[in-house]
Length: 408
Image (tube, rainbow, N blue to C red; front, side, top):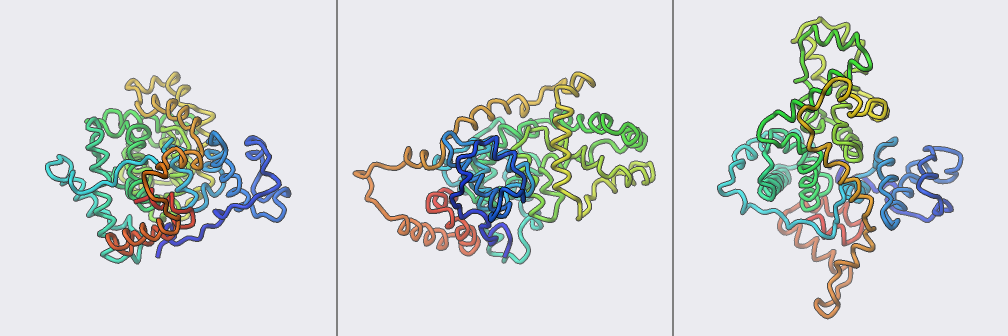
């Protein structure tokens, strides 16, 4: 059907290793395929390190960030369902209620959201039936309206649904709604103002970043008068709208979720820098340059892009650029809130502890075996949502009933 639903768990079946006692720093120094891996492939070794970071108390978020940044990212959809919430400091046992259609009546953004979702057919996996896609589109509408209703200070923008559908396809409705809510108040917050002033402010980093690495390319772009508009959809959708390969989208989401909110604009600058030769050979006029840059090659090396972008950010942090070019006259809300998100994520308890904290007392609810809970959840989901939800459920089963019941 689709890789994000049907892909095997890869390294998600955790096994104990002699390296269990290694510190987080020692693990991060290990390279994929190094001699110390012995019988474990680098993918299995990385999966094991991620599992150890997830079960550490408090959760070793730095190791999780390193895993998201490193080669291959978070490897599988199952691992992403465990790690993405930790990167955003989300308790999977305390999720918002399942969004429903009740919020549609009278909501000022409903018609626009409906039109955008109906136009988003290419964002759904090829081969999906009309019924399955229809179910997910309805969930997508409810998911977006729930966030906008819960946070009336946020304003919908075209492209927001591209972020939402990536989360929905990867982690399911309830967890996706919780993630979208956190992203909206942090990483995407600058794009959700009533005007585009803050969005333009984020875009204004692009040319100074290119100039800092390649003045000749920067001057060529200025002469062409192409501006920065070619990168707008990249930033506001985290490239979800412009990439046709869903694996590439997921790889970039691993990177952005583990990074500073301004990382997507650094990624845009690095993407242009990596195409320097192409650009300089292009006719120096707005139409030609815009057409070239707005079409990302299908074989673009994303692992190289991520590695170089991360290094680029470390060499040229936003604070340095702001001092040199008088950028950010309008302060980024996303950047300002990032530190608090980092602090809260570093204080998270592992799921094994969180599960105990929310478990109902034995004298309130009769005990049910995990198998019974799973059967009830599968029956209820499949009866109400059909094959689309059941396909998501099948991958969640490998992580146990707790994750399953939190997805829907």
